[in-house]
Structures are given as structure tokens and as C-alpha cells.
Image (cartoon, rainbow, N blue to C red):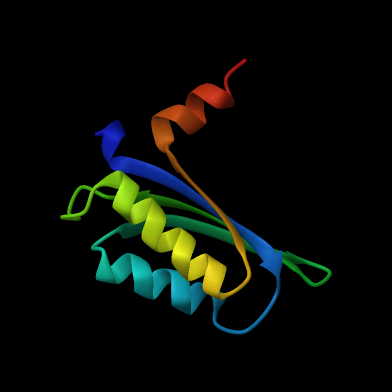
Length: 92
């Protein structure tokens, strides 16, 4: 279902452990990564993930807060959005 999907975008200076830290947090929350894209532009890391939160026992708000905390520990910027909102924002 669409309400079970979220889009997670992470940006910041590239460093070791970004994917590991965020993926570990997601695994602990039982958030499934369904698709992932990442790139490095010069020294700038950008990653976008489509995730499914249907198996998580946590609320969207808690998932967002925990991912924000993990990204913050890496000095990264993170956006966590419900897919339906993301889709509407990018529809003309």
C-alpha cells in the first residue's frame, strides 16, 4: 500500500559508514529498503531510498526521528517523507 512507502534522502560530505549506519537503523526499526540509489559528486554524498514501513512496529514519526538522529550523528542532512506526499510534490 502507498501509505506504507517512504522516501528517504540523505546528503552531506562523503565519509565511511553512511550507508551502514542508516541501513542498521532501518533494520532495527524493521524498515525494508526496496530501492536505493547513491552517488558521490566530488566529495558530496547523495543517497535516495524507497522503503516500506509496513513491518515496523514504530510510527512514521518515530521512524523519522530515529533516522534523523542517525543522520545527525554523521553530520548528514536527511529528509524522510511519505511516498504519497513525495509523489504529489513532484506532480505538475
